[in-house]
Image 1 (tube, each protein chain N blue to C red):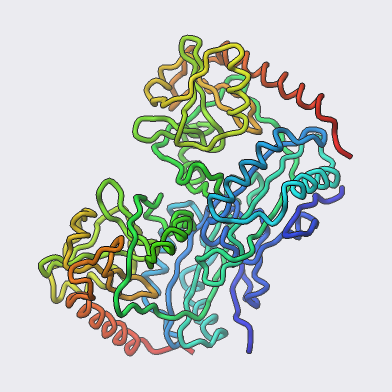
Image 2 (spheres, rainbow over the protein chains, first blue to last red):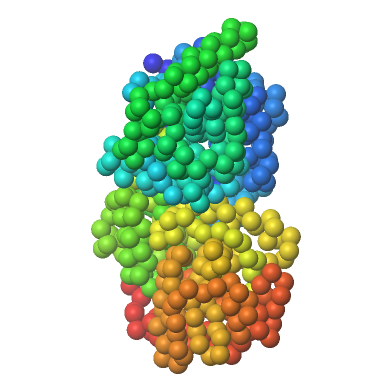
Length: 281
Length: 281
C-alpha cells in the first residue's frame, strides 16, 4: 500500500518523513495551534469554517500562516487526491517555529498538514462523562495545549468514562474535544462562553433552531446533571448522546428523543451539503 | 567549530539532526515534561535536585524515563565532555511519544537532552514584572505548557516589562520561569503553593534561613506591591531584584539590601559547592 502523504513547510512528503527539529516551539513550549476537519469521498466538510477558525487562532497567537486561503484550499484538495481514503481527517498544525532562545517565537512558523483516515465515533448507548474542574486556557484559540485531558485519561479509564465534562465556577464549558448541549423541557441549551467555538456546534445550533427553542447562555453543572438529555457535538462525533455523568444516569439514562432527532437532522444536513458540493478533481 | 551534540532516544548525535516525527505527543498535545539545569566548567549545579524533580514530573504524568538515575548522570557527564562550553545549560525533555491516535500516550516516550551554552541573566537596576491573572495548570509538574507566558510576551514587550507575575484569587504564585519572594520589615516571604517548586528557590530559602526570618505562606498581590523588596530566583537568574511591578516602583525602586545580601550569599554557596565537587572526566 502506498504511504500517506503529509505536508510540511512547503513540501508534500511521505508521512514517515515529516519530522521537526526539537527546537520547535510547539514541542518545547506548547506554542502553536491546530484545526481538524473531515473529508468524505474527497469532499471536505465545513472547510471554510475551519479555515476561518484556523486563521483566527493564528492571529490571536500572533502566528502568520505561510499560505493564502486559496493555497490552503488547494493543499486540501491535492492531499485528498494523494491520500485516497473514503474518510479522511485533516489536521493542520502551526507552531511558533524554531526558536533560537527556546522561548520567543521564530520569524518563520512551522506548518504541517496531516491527512489521516478516520472513523466516526458511535455510541448507541450514549457516552459516559467524568466531571473535571478545569477551564481551558485561551479557550478562543484552538491551541496545542491538551495537557489536562491527557493527564485525566488515567482516572477516566479507571472509572470507565469515555470523556470529560469541564466545569469552572459552577458552570460547564465543554468536553476535551467537543462541545456540550443540554435539553430540558424540550429547550436546547449550550454554554455561551468559556469554551472553544466548535464548528459542529455552530451547525447543530443552526439546524436545531428550525424545530426547537435554542438558548446560548451560562449553563450550570447542577442543571446539566438534572437535564432531560445531554449531548455532545464534534467533527468525528457529529451528535452523540451523553447518558451518564460521573456514573449517574442523565434523564432516563438512555439517548433521548431530541438528541436522536438532531442526530438524524445533522446527518441529512451533511448529506445535502455533500450532494450540493461536487468533488474536485 | 564542532557542532553541539544532543541526546535523542538512546543516541548522541549532532544537534541539527535531533528531529522528532510530527506525531509526537509533546508537539501535538503539549503532553510532556522537561527540566533545566546548569553546568559550570563541566560541574552540574544541583543535579540531584533536578533529577528528583524530573522523576517526580514524569511520575505525575505517568511517563516512564527510559534510563536509570545512574545512566542520566552519565549522560550529563558525557554530554558535558562533548559540548565543551564553560557555561552549559541542560534541557531534558520527555514526551508522551509517538501517539497512534494523536491523543493517548505511546508505550515508548521520546527523550531528548539538549545541552546549550547559556549566559546568566543580570539586572543591575532590577527587573520589571507585569501582573497577569493566571495559574499554571498542574503546577507540580514542570510540563511543556508555556502557552500563556508566550502569549503575553507581546503585551509584556509593549509595556517594556521583563517578565510576568502570576496571581490567582488575589494570591501571587510565580513568574513565567522563576519563583518570587517578597521582603517586608526584614522578613523574607515566598508563596507556599500554586507554583512550581524551584530548585534555586529551595536553596535560597535554605541560605536565607541563616540570616533572616523566612516564611512560606500565602502571599497576596497587594502585599507584594507594598513590599520593601521583591526578588526572583531561577537557574539562569540566581537571585535577581524586581524593582517595578506594572510600571510602579517596588519599595525604593532600587535593589534592596536583603536582595543584595542574598545574591552574594547564593554566589558564595554555589562557589563552595563547585569547589567541593570535583569535575568528572
